Image 1 (spheres, rainbow, N blue to C red):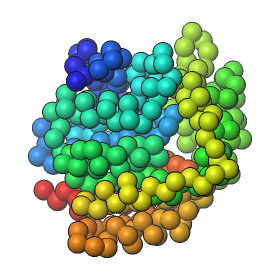
Image 2 (image 1 turned 60 degrees about the vertical axis):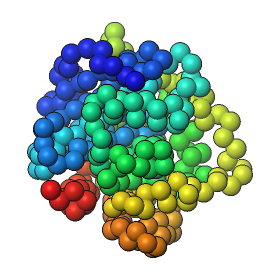
Image 3 (image 1 turned 180 degrees about the vertical axis):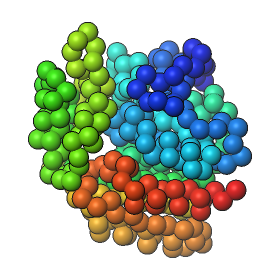
Image 4 (image 1 turned 30 degrees about the vertical axis):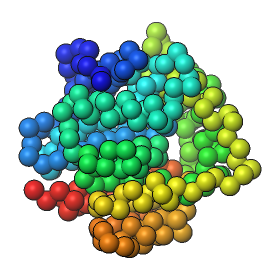
Length: 309
């Protein structure tokens, strides 16, 4: 079980958030960002980022949840991302290892039940949590991930993870991101692109370096995208006992509209009859940034419905 490794400190890049550190079972220092009222009677929200992403992706939405609903919000950095230690063994950048880290850290934090907000890989971890520790899951928001993962989206992700040359300046970082993602996010502002760049890279010894271990690319090398990707309907069905919100980017190449609609319809079938909602983030691809007002409103409304206390 992870044990606290240091006293909490202000997060260096997320004003209003605290940094908590824990030791994993194999000795890595793992980071969780926290905001809001840890003594609130309302359920906390667990925010889980995408493959190479980090807690900073939830700065805005997490702050809004904490401010408007008085909840405790915790955003995780998996091993090899953000402020967590990088692993010397890249093969441990594995969903089941990350799931073990997640569950052990929740236990160390004293959180028996929570609402989950998972982006991409974080959504996969949410579904796996529903299988392995169903009692902890009170409601689920999946951000642009589903029971069928489109091969073209995975191919695009594999094409750039760990392969982007370090930019020489923040201006060049923005240009790089626009080149990679401009088609998926055609209406973002310059301010938004700069904030995005600061979540991808950090300055260390005068140079911009990624906020993730570039060895993550090795976990994608052996994916055979010529073969159909096995569907994840059994994993998704584990969410049936709890309320569910699916967010899909209108321009997503990882989650199709057809799959999104099928997920919502399927969730409401059978004996459980739990509410299921679909929200489309306009003019955004994979994965929606969770910063536009309609998407923020959809998340806040869902959390209030799932935990009305």
